[in-house]
Image (cartoon, rainbow, N blue to C red; front, top):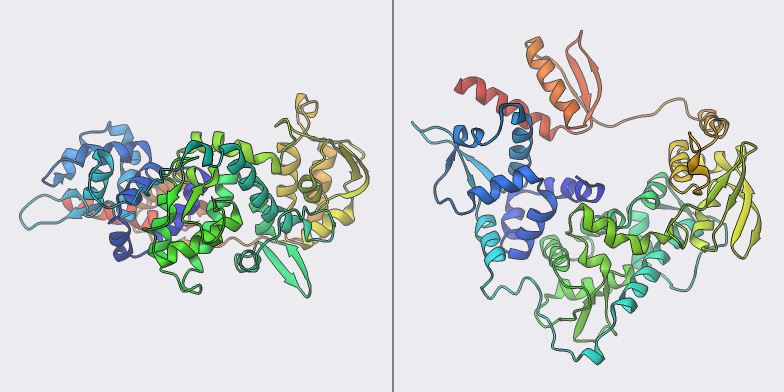
Length: 468
């Protein structure tokens, strides 16, 4: 699951079942969650059960997969249950069985076969071709708006390099602070550790992070969170370059158009316009991982040179050269390097103890800095192994360690297992799904970052032992 899919899945997982029932009333939402959140094996299970009118026995479902793929099956079933797509039927005197939930199944069938008057996939306008907004203009609008958000975050640190071609609204600035991406210190705004991690994400993951912040604060804005989610999933199903009518939108969705326009996700001629255009940032919201990478490539110049290649050269004496004219790229470098010379297509400076300590004080970690330098290293540097000089990498870490002696990780401790086999099986499952942080075989306990899948696994194992 991609980073953006995981972020949106974690938000959906926290919602109650009644909210899912409302969400799945719209075919566009059911299709979007099916396309984006569900892995291949789980999709196969859903499609196989979609037109089965009776419950499917668990034994029959398990017969569909190889014995060595049982872990994959358990993971898929657990995910479908947490998304309220699949539920278990326990009937007296009959074996346990699975069945797809409604209205998900009905809405997905409607989305796949068409028909109905739900209009959940938008209402296209019949605009003449000569009056339509070209896709190139929509891409440029989205790029400018999104870069203005990133430019505000990194350019507000005192570097004086932020691009002010597009001003941000007060609501966008407030949302960045509420999400912990920037921090107000008096009259000055500073980027945080979470903000720098946000900068390093792919664009689609950045968009989803921002939209989930928007969702989490929907109640404070006087909006219905279900209405907001349905509209976001609808945007992901629209066609780039096609304009859509605002006539069927709710009051909440009409207000959202104004806010999403600040991020470059939708375009309107003006607030009173009867139509709107989704930009590429909107139409890739519910695409699969491959489509996201290709679609977002046009926006990744915020962190790459104009030709798409790396642009940073760093020497063993900590001198840094960046072949770029982007004010955004220069501002990002200024977060952890002391820049001293600027030419039309290049800046030069040095990574120093003071510049790294300043970045660390903002919450930026040495691993994030090293990851940024490695990812955006010049092609000539990438011919070397390792890419960055070892002395530079080690010293950046040592400069951070001067002030940081301990790192806290939030999570959950599982203990008191009755048998070694129960502990080892659960611990192995936690490691396979990537949530295991620490374990102690002697004391039969382990620490994980997420508990939902582990609890579901333990419940299934308990029911399996009872059934066996």
